[in-house]
Length: 258
Image (cartoon, rainbow, N blue to C red; front, top):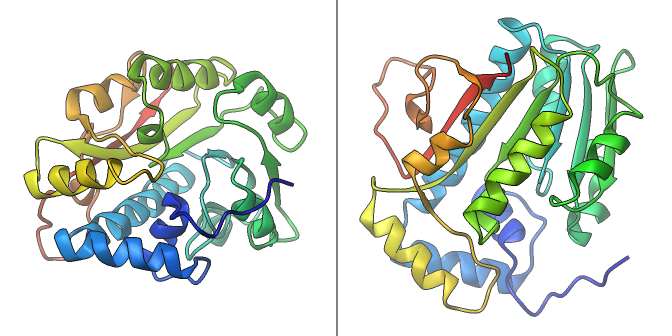
């Protein structure tokens, strides 16, 4: 397994820190604290992204009848992981997680605590290798049946937008009609302070994350039938509670493959 470098901050570990997790190192906490000193709202963005993921999974299970999930670019286990949310409603749900971060691999056992009725698996594969991802997923999932593809905050790590769109297209091509895409990413055009903070972070030498205009995030859903209200700032997607949420620089949506 690739050695884990604890001397350089890592985005997955920083994100884990912002979510309140413990799978990070002092260098990640320092980088996370430096970021929040410039833009405290990043913690809200991280937690809102996670909350959107949970709401979209609950919709998929309850409203769309989905029982299979392919979660690519999983990140470090925290709370309300995909299998925990899905299996809490439908215990027979089956989930395949995909990532190729050595730290995520080291903690993958936390992603494999399935219900007896369902199943979870972890595959150590690159985001860019859609063929191998689909082949590996087919060991756990029946890819002739509708499956939800989850891409949560991962495509911003792909520097070339056309390559990022190709990743989505190639993965969806291996899924049947009736499958869904749940996607959310950091966006431009809503919060200039967030954009400034992220651009500064990208210049530190850490693995960069590229915020993209909302229209580019929306284009990931080309060819799909968007679930209302479409691609929106994530707190506005099927919000829960009585307080009207405020938009943030994180957009996402849910789309069905015809």
